Structure formats: C-alpha cells, structure tokens
Length: 329
Image (cartoon, rainbow, N blue to C red; front, top):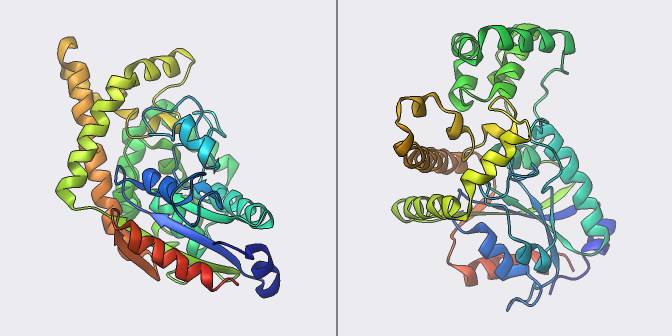
C-alpha cells in the first residue's frame, strides 16, 4: 500500500512523515501496532518504522514507569529512540529533533514510512515547526547555577524562576532541575525570559506531514490511567526504582524526574507512615499522570494542520492514512 516513498522524496525534495500524538494511556502503541505491525490486518503492515516521541523512554532501565513498548511489540514493529541514554544524561527537544530528522532520512531511504508517535507535545511541536532560536549553552553560567542548586536546593531556584519567568515556571515541574537551570540560564544570559523564545505555528519546510491527534473521553482516559498505574506496581515498579537508586541514580537526575519515578522522592510522602507510603506514591503517580494528560489535551490546540480522531476509530484513521499515502505515488 505504501509505495514509492523514497522516489517521492527524491522527486519532490520532501520527506513524507506520519505524526501521531495523543495523551498518556490513550492507546497509541496498540493503534500503531494494529496499523503497521508485521502481520497486522492492515494494508500498511510491515511498511513503517516508529520514532518514539517520548521524552522518558530514551532512558535505559526505566521500562515499567515509562510504559515502554514490550519486546513482542518491538519484534513486530521497529522503534527508534528507546534506551539510548542513562538516566543521569540530559536529552532535550533539540536532541530529539536532530535525531528524528536523521532517522526520517534513513527510514525513507529504506522505502519505509517514518511514524513519529508519542505524547511529549513539546518534542512533536518542535519537530513539526522547528526549534526556537534560543541562545547556545553558556557552560560557565550553567556550572554556576548547578553549584547554586547544590548549595541552595531546587526549591530556591524554582521560586526564582517563578519570579523571573512565570510562563516557563508554569510548564516546568519544581523537581525538573535540568529545565529550571536552562530557563534561568537563558534569563540571565539574554535578559529575556525563556518563554519569549516561542515555537512558531508554521510547519517546517522540507517535509510532507500527515498529522493525527488521538483522543478519548476524559473520564475513560482517567480510568485507563488509574488502571495503568496499578498495573505498573503489579509489574514491579517499586523494584525498578530500587534498582535505579542502587545503581546510583537520584532524584536530581533527568530521567528520575519523570512521572512514575519522581513521586518516590516527593516531599509529600515524608509525612506518610511506612505502611501507607506505597499506596500514597501510587495515588500521586495516578494524580500526576491525569494532570499531565489534561495538559496534553490543552497542547492539541498548538499543533497546526492536525486531524483529530477518536482512538478507536481505526477505520477512519486508516482511510486518512491511505489518502495521504496515495499522494506519494
């Protein structure tokens, strides 16, 4: 069904890319597998490769809490940008865009369709519209801020960010020290808030995008989130976190600031007695995941030229992709 992708790219100079965005636990992985997995009952079976747009699935050893695709899924459908960094190594939107661009070229050269799929809206928006022109990193200033972090703590730096750049602070978690430091670095080096360097709403040139947004009824999605969190605990999330901390990773590491991990270090759990602690952590993860899903829904408005489908409307989604692919011949 998907034919001539490489020839289309050579003939037009455009890279055809399918982008699928949806909130956490909405069913993205199942949908993509049903559409493109080897042996799937679909005209696209075996004709695509997935580029994961999940900011935390890049980290090794963080499988359960990030809902990383299981080995059976990966055997049926190649996925990229999984398990490429250790939890103490930062991975930015810029890193994602550069690697996704390279992967798209490689996948198209193999005459397969690149499918950028995930729920990290900031990554997808930057991939679609390009990176904002933020200044280069200032290592001297960054090291100074890191030293302040060590001496004064994340709370002090976050409160400073709230004062200097409230718009950035509103979308950065108080424990996300990597992004707090970056935002303060930009404020200090340019005299301009990090939030003023906005991504445009114009799609990048050089690409031929098909953009799909998946949705579920809010109550249904929240119930799926609650169920997923319980399944994570049943699958051994506590042991996974213990393994990471035993390996030397801590709450300040970029990977450990993900939902599903940071809650184990939250100050909120310190008040809980030991027998209630795990239940409280589980409830915190579910709460934070629901809040994250709500922000993802809000982010929908910032994705240009996208078509929104209920995640279970697979026939409509398949027809939409078919129409896109028919223009590649």
